[in-house]
Length: 404
Image 1: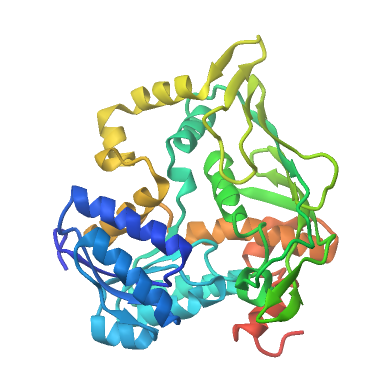
Image 2 (image 1 turned 90 degrees about the vertical axis):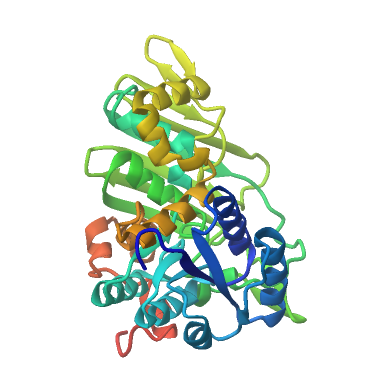
């Protein structure tokens, strides 16, 4: 396929996030007709895939064929790119099949159910010469681009010193809940530390660089019963954590979340530097938000809208077109567009598999520290020297044999 060729695209997994991806591809198709052709939808649930195909037809004007088996989909539809939106434990299985068939891939976050799973995807991509992207949308938002500029180029808060990203709330554990694969550790890899937390971990790397050490508590204070086809099963993943994260540049951050704190709820997110801080007030996963405020030590305050305008002026028209093609500002649309461009132009995507794995390694370092009840070096987790938390998940997913 040449640089101008239509990307023959498939979507594997037809759940909630895939619908957001489908909407993004429809937006892209409106701006650049012929950039992509959705040639297949794949999901183990025929009902889900058929319903998804109905939505695709409404948005794109044609109905892609539906498959329930990855190999059959690859053999018959022959996609050149696959957007993988399956449950976490299926990411590496589907990715390997696609790569070996000659398709480029984009994998939803978190990139692999464990670091070992992530590394198998990256190794296969290198072996077969395929593009491997991570579907990370948050860093691409205008506010996040502004934050990166504010910290690394304009240096408006001075030298980064510390941050606090803390949330506490109460969620009734006895409220009726239906079973979902996310509550089983072998399917999900863990809870919000690596699920929504994948966004925060990627953003912290994007804003502040590489992590050095992690010391963390991860726990489950409540039992969280769920109904699984009439049987009561209990969540295996965390409802709380507190992590102290130090970075190679000297920054130290506290990242903490719980839904098991009755009586008083609060959220506080502040990034401090030598000259001031950015005060945020959204959540501890996806910021900074529109109501964020820069507060300097002399008392000067600037709101996010002012900062965004200054950032956009600073990068000029060329920079705006590069970061926000066609005026897209939605992160999912931008990640999908970047993937298609990478496939067409045979270039590295902005957030490739290595980036996805390195962000994931921060989350895994939190789990590993909690498991060992000790501080851990980030690079020891990234390099596989520490994997006590991940080993049982790897064994359950056929990624590790014999190690106890």
